[in-house]
Structure formats: C-alpha cells, structure tokens
Length: 328
Length: 283
Ligand SMILES: [Zn+2]
Image (tube, rainbow over all chains, first blue to last red; front, side, top):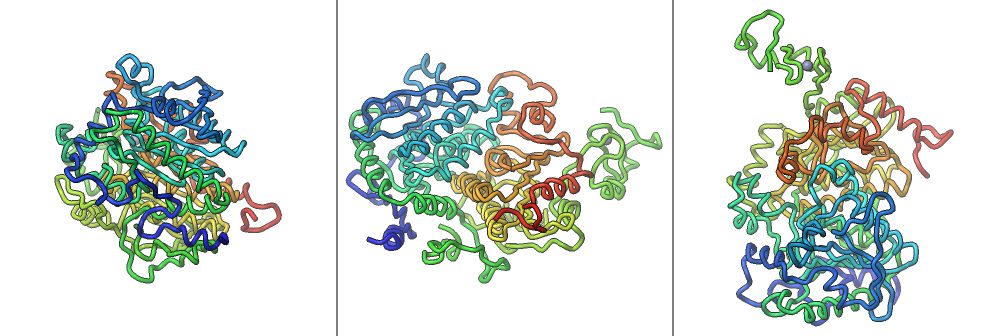
C-alpha cells in the first residue's frame, strides 16, 4: 500500500478517526452502547468513584516492568502526575498519567489528582524522552482539573498547560490517549493531544466541572445536574463530537467493579492502536494529528468567505476539507 | 473610594456619557480626552479596557487593517440552554458589541511591517473562546505561516466558552497547534495580554508567544481569583494575578504601557528579521 493510499484510505471522514483500529470492545457509535444508559450526572458520579481503577491500577495490569520516573528537574516531584517506562507486550513505551488516590489519605498525597505546574513539566520531560528514544507515548487522563491554588499560579499553571499541549501537538512519536475517569478541562488536555483518543465508557471530558458551570451560568452549584446534561460531557456525546475516537467498554456495573477486566480491555485497545500507529511515517502522524485537532469547531460561514483559504499541504488538498462543511 | 473632582461638586453633575471616574485614583475623566489618551487615565496611568476596533487603531498603521473571516458566525453545537438559549446570548452580544464574535482578525501593518493581527474583545461574552474565535485565530496563524509574516495576538478573555462545551476546550489544542507551526518555522509570534486574560486562553496560545507582553495592571491568571480564594479559604494578596505579579514570577517578558505598545512590538519584529532581507521572516 502506498503512503498516499494509506492516508486517504485511513482518513477520518465524518465518521471518526481513520487511524483508529476498531476491534472488539471498542465502541465507535453511540448505538452500540447498552440501552438504559446512565444519565450524564450519574456518569459524572461513576467517573469520580473512588473505587474506580486509577492510573497506577491500570498501569500495573496493562504493562510489564513499569519503572516510575520522578521529578521535573526544576522544582519537585508532583505526585498527581506519574510516569515512566514500561513494556507493552514486550515493547518499551513511555506512560504518563494523572493519579488520583484510592483512599482519603492517598488523595491528600495525590492532591486529588490535581497537578501543579511541575507535574505538567514532569510530563513534558517524559514526552521529550519518548521522542528522543523513539518510544510510543501512552497517556492516562484522570483529573478534576489543574490545581487552582496560588502557588500553582505563581509557578505558571497556564504556561505549563499551554506548553504541554504545544509539545504534544508535534511530538514525533505515536501518541495514544486514554481518558480513564474525569477529563477536567485544560488540566486534562495537557495530557490529551494524541493520534488516537480513547475514553472508558463512563469517563467524562468537559470544559469546566458541572458544578463550576452551574455556579457561573445558573449562579447555583445545585444546578450541576442540569449543567452536566447541557455540557455534553459523557461518552455518547464525546463520540458524537469526535472528542473521543472510540469508547472502551467497561464491565457491566462499571470499571470499579472489575479492575482486571477493565485493564484487559484497555490493553487490547492499546496494543491494536500502537501496532497500527507504529507503522505510519512520523510526518503523516504529525499532519493528521494537526488535522484531527484543527477540525474541531461548529460555525456558519457564508459561501465564499472573504478570506482566501490558507495554503494547504498536499495531503490536505487531496483530502476532504473539513471547513467546507463548517467543521465537524 | 474617595471621589475627587475638579469642581468640588457632586457626581450627579458628571453625566456618564461625558465623564468616567477612574476606578484607581478617583479622578473624573472627560470621556473625549480619555479616548484620545487610548483609555489610559492621564492622572494615574490606569488602563481601562479597550475595544477591538480601538485596539486596532492603536496598533495598526492608518488604513492598513483589512479584516479577514469577518462573516464566520457561531452555530449552536450543543443546543445549549442555561437561563437563556445560547443563540440568544450570541444575538444579544452581537447587538451590544457590534461584532459577530469575540475576535477581529486581519492583515495589517505595524510601523510598516506586515503582520497577521488578531484582537480579542472582552465586550463580546467576556471575550470567551468558542468555535468562531478558535477558527479565526487558527486561520490567522495559518495565514502568518503561509505568508511567512509575523503573528500578533492581543488577548482579552475570560477563557473557553462554556456554552460550547468540550468543543470549546478543543479550541485550546487547535490554536496551540497552529502557533506551534510558527514556532517550528521561526516566524515571530508576539502575544499581548490585556485586562483580563484568564483560563483557557492563557492556558493556550496566549502563553506561547516568542515575546509575551502585558499591559499594566491587567488581570492575568489560570483560575478565577474567586476559585483560588475558595480553594485556600483565605483572601489573596494584593496584586495577585496582575501583570506585575506575572512579570515578577517570570511569565511575561515586559509590562508595557499602552502608549508604548506599538513601537515596542515594532522593535521586536524588526529585531527578528532575517538579516539583509527586507520584510522577511524565516525561510
Ligand atoms: Zn486614575
């Protein structure tokens, strides 16, 4: 298969990401979900369940020989982000994830999975390590959001997130993102830019917490349930908007009822995706990763908008231009 | 705050369409003179918010600005309804601000240097970034990339637009990916932070300029001060999340008074030129 065929043949059209390897257990269409879905608010609760498998629970079951690496080489080691080198079916990969606690004590240590800037800087150090040694990157997203405290502001929370996003947009290795639980805003996106983005069936991904949204738009945090519906943060919505390329099926009753089965589903998905991505030339990965995130947006533009279209690389000219349809 | 006025009369003698009180020093300022001074208090130097058109007047050479992508308007990706449906909020903001969304973009010259220019307007739904803002900023960065000319973005934003949900969040990655290409191609990007620049805008392209400038006294931060204050359960120190705080902590290069902004931007763009090549950046 020529490179051209591969790209055109794999191109995400209106239906999801062309890179995606669809295999058993992956849900790419909301109709494949069991009927009687939980409400968005119930999904928020499930995603936050303290018994849910967190990053280290998953890493221990999916990868072999995980060696954790610590510190951002500048300020300290942030326990809310963990990362290191592990093997996935014998192949070395870099894994980075947000780490919530499974008990109150652990949550205090882990800051409830809310990273400080140094956490993102540790993540970036590991991203660069992946690129330097040509190792695929797997990130595990699970955070209520980046920590909003004054020390985080002093140390540049916004800059750390922005830089982390920027680094991921052009990291020259395959990147697979798995949203395990809560995908809380920019603090999640700092680990969320990949070639394929997967989410567990009951994970959420949102621009702000439902409570925060309710407090601002309804002026009452008790409207969080309504906000959760309006914000379209649950699995079926993520598929519809393309924020997630596919959902990973959870055991009946939710991931917290069976960590082993959840991890097994994640593992088979990761193996399939990385197997595929590792055969795509890096330049194509980067172009399509750009295009994947470039295409998000819903707007209306009268035909023949005033602006000349920006110069397009060859692969974009031959592909369907997402702007023609006004985005997704 | 103590009210001072030059005639020793009461405030009702200063109708608001003619006079504005400076929130910083209390001086009553004659509106026409305030506009002439680019909305900077003549007495204490307080910087009032500046609309996108006035900002373009300030930075772009006379008649050099040509707007691009002027007709892109929002759709309602989520069918979002809070106390009002999202399309009604958009319509109200359009009527109030006279703009179609929270950013104006185009080509311009700054002291003779051709640039791709984007200016956000806080008046439009708090300058929030949804699909339209994200798309226009991305196209502006892509135009800078295609034409090999510098990008200047002036931010004024409360962050991502909640009414567009996760699609709004994805605009962070979209705009960052676009400015990352300029970074790789060594095409200058100057980011100007004005009052206020917070949340998802600061956590994306606005923090990534080759040069990051801030106007004096602007509110600049990741989290809303209220959230931060509630998180630690105490009041925040004076000056927290202001331009000077960011300068002190190393996240902006300079705090530049508005009246010097244009010449300062021109200085940096000239310095980044490819040697011996007029009006050319990168290869
Ligand atoms: Zn004043």
